Length: 228
Image (cartoon, rainbow, N blue to C red):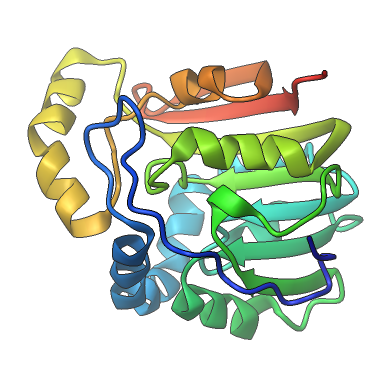
């Protein structure tokens, strides 16, 4: 294991399909998808901030102390954390990380951005006071494994804050998502018809608070590591 200040090596790719998940690219597939889309994500930060900034701000305001941002992408979440926190971002995509570092790497509270597989986080147990992640579980080949890793590196009494999207609670919207699910996944490596709360329920986490918005598509979850 390494300290957050060290630059870890990316883990080996696994091709195992997650149990009960119908769609799962390999890590190499996901990395390739976001290599192709990294610059577009960076250019569209202003739109992402406008559409989801309020939700992120309300949830991530609960973060304290040393914060790990899993699947940090282009670093958008940095802007929504309390200024008293310190920040470490990890992502599978070196292209995403390059954009994140260019935008936010100069901030005093940003410790660094590191290339890393969310399913095998290269940090010791109980390293971070808060672990955050946004719109990420839909892309992990093994989402429950990644959530278990978030729980493992979070200190006892700490918080795991997840801003996720998934299947709408409104029938016509949900049916549209289901109809387009395969095409959407093929283009973006994103399972947009997932159930984020069900995933958390399968992981080593206990839900403290949860809320939904935008016809049930967006879900904000505050969880804590299970004890024992």
